[in-house]
Length: 233
Image (cartoon, rainbow, N blue to C red; front, side, top):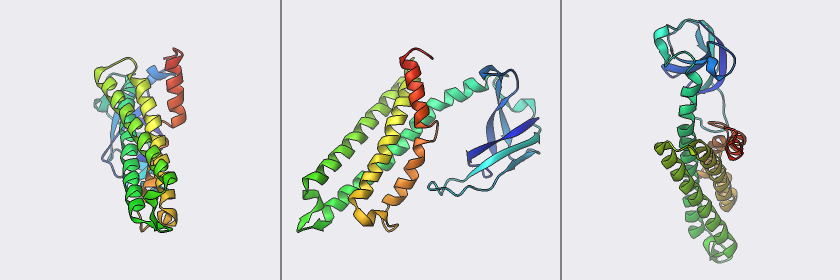
């Protein structure tokens, strides 16, 4: 029987199943188990759909358990395996979010480049001003650096390398910060037009911002990296 709640659940109220980490034993990670809760389960309910800055196509709501009965057959793994199962999914999830930021940032870079080649000021294309060329160069460099780090982390994760978790945290931190920074710079290069919904930049900016929070905030990524660097794993 489950009791409790969890906020900010992607697909909350819309998904058919909910893979849930629940405390079934002692304090600490060994007391956590993983169970699958079906949407039809008695005692499962949902909060209102959240109104968010971005990600409007992704439903988000609180999930509530009130004396929610779940059969033992719905447990994944053995009792106490929940924390381990959750950790196994986090590294890949962080690469996924980093890749999303990389894609959003790349789309913004391409839009900014196209706008600079088309828009004219003082008789010249924006692309002819060296200061703006430097911005475009820095944005491309940041995205390439993030892409390489994502590839390295993915390779380490596939190989089961000891440093995979640290490298996934590094890649997620860099890629999500870079994605938002590039989107913000692209909006600036569009001037006032970037702030209008007639152009795609404002949506990319809103959508990539949450990536610095999802799958562990970038502050937590720094904690993970630091602990590996000083030997606290």
